[in-house]
Length: 356
Image 1 (spheres, rainbow, N blue to C red):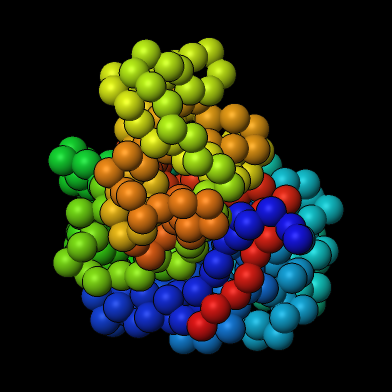
Image 2 (tube, rainbow, N blue to C red):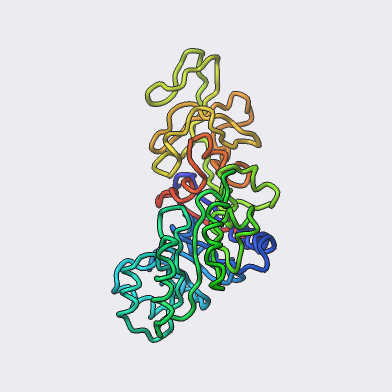
């Protein structure tokens, strides 16, 4: 028998979340962001649930080819654009749209020939200082692209640094507003902005983490009002139980010391499965209908949990590391990270099944 750890991907939850998002952002068109292999869920597993989106956005050419081979006929957007001039032949072959954020990319487009018009998402650096043309350089970039016969539509694209924080989007929006007279289609909002900042929705929104039922802010309470469903559940089983006395220690480095007699469960899940090694004592694990606290350092293949107050738990009892009963955001907060990282860090050795 294999180890009892398993990730379950609920494709119906993706479909449900997408419907809630579309209700929220209507009439804006929705790009489903499936970068990093659909945030660790597997593009092919969630693909059937994406039929109602207007386009799929991603990073890698291999992912773009995959969605085309799966039968996707609607737009596909390369969020980071292309990385070499030679990539433009693949963009043309697979009829991809691309972000353009650097002068060398414009030069490459000027020198290339295309069978199909190239739809461009011209990136404005509105203040995140990661990708895009500065406000001072944006008009020149636009003018160079506008005169090219090989270029089709041009959409103003930007990205918000603080849409999930109190600082918000206002400073960046003031810079974007400088170009409103151009009457370009706009694609501005990520998940956080799309859900919480109506002024950013414009023509198109790019929704990623929210489709997977995880909060853009890292706080599960922030999305409770939307009634979204977690798509990934990571589960395993208790494989050993130990009764220990006060003063005994648990795990590597003897990090955890029992303050009283305790029952300790060993669970088949460790950092080689994608569980965060730095998770502290007290991080919740869902066992027999309640949260039980982590006790001891995470091992490569196992972790240990205090089940003293869960007498019904025993060897073979199912365990949820995150998912339907325990939001990934809650686990991530204890571990000092975000739900995005937990999902995308799921290890290849973990068996994955699909529900829904």
